[in-house]
View 1 (cartoon, rainbow, N blue to C red):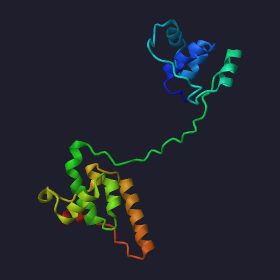
View 2 (spheres, helix red, strand yellow):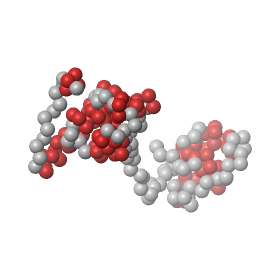
View 3 (cartoon, helix red, strand yellow):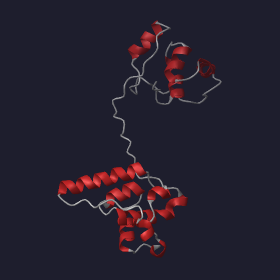
View 4 (cartoon, rainbow, N blue to C red):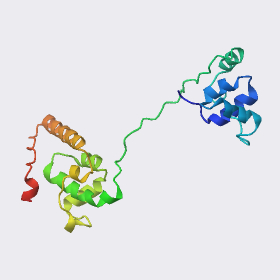
Length: 192
């Protein structure tokens, strides 16, 4: 069940301004009835200013009146009119210990999957297009030590994500009328 914003402050306001039972307030605020009773006795939440759920669109006065009339009635939180933000995955977090392996993974992808765009590699590896360009141009600060290694084995991405990105890139090439490059050979790493 969804809880009101600032449940303790809301409980303080409901205790001070309404004739609801401790159980009703506790159910609405996601608290234990004894905690609500302690707030009413002044043992808990001293100095907390009450938060008006009616003025903030979380509850209506009609709902409060219904609760005051029937002690078995449970208050219901109003649906918010504010749209909830969509959670995008954002950039992928790479642990500090694996960050030095990232250029190796980028070099592997550039060599074995030329159909992947920079944006796809950046999303897959959790890096920037600038870093990808530096690895491609061999201007990266650690170019001498970069050895193309499979990012799946390095733990920088999952095989499922890599396959999905490669399939997207292949579909894009097919739509544009270009030839799809053959998949890399398993022994390509030993030959290099």
